Image (tube, rainbow, N blue to C red; front, top):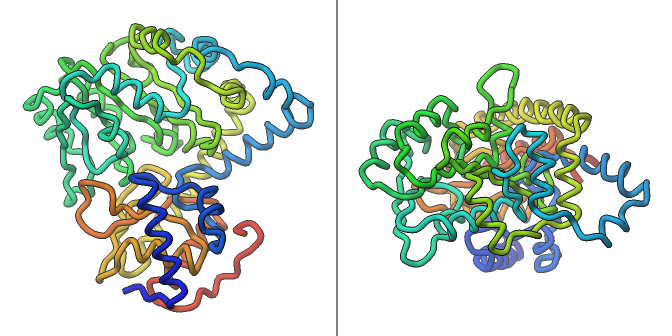
Length: 401
């Protein structure tokens, strides 16, 4: 059980209201500062991003834009059109730019694809990212494929294929790794899905967390992007917020059938990126930046693995396996997720996500993101103190504050 003082309980009620106003998503840090200034957030372990990649982006932005006086050009000039940015990205990814659609965040691509190309029936695994079922148009049937808690909410590929063949949807969605549990489906199994479900009009593979997944000891990147021309029904969606820590920029891309890209560009998505997003995409394709980014990507994966192992040692919680930069945690022994989230935020300044609004979960769950090594150490100490109801002995250093 989580205990609150009378003053903490008042703040917890405000937190509950703020979360309700945000719907199925979490309030932003800026919203917290505006609505609840009495709370000081020390660690943002709710939003899912690599802090070392953010540091790297800021380093380049300071050197190439701020110090060189190019910020005026970035603000005053119109950014390039969608197809021009796609050309830059295509050369880097070795993908035909005609197959690339640039989005104002992955969320815009999800909405555009589902609104324009899902006609009759969509099949969605649950628990998963809520926007995939929230954006479905009226008249489109939604079929939920319930992932098994006994299998850590991981996808059983054979059962999934059989279920899709039974329901015959025109669109299916596979987030890989999945959100909120971090379950990963190996590339060979995803290719089997593509082969056996060729009758499905749209197979959406969301790779927003793919930079944290790996299939060998070298942590080599894996992706299905290069298979779009082989499988014309494949749609790969990629957010840049998570792996590069630039959620405020709103940058994402989709790789899909060229006819789909042409249709979207002809219907309102010609000029949907801002100048900062274009700068990011051009930086993303820079070889020097890419090399340095891969180093911080691997460093972050290694530290995340250490973090997960430390979490598994804590009492009264169950940590689910994850191939992403976050873990799904089930609270045991009568603890409530809303109370746990409020207590961590109010008493320790750690912002995490309750999963009460995630359909398909059975129990009390939270989702916890990995941060920097110093922040992760503070998170471990704070969660331990919260569970055991003891004062935290960890001294918060400058890097956490």
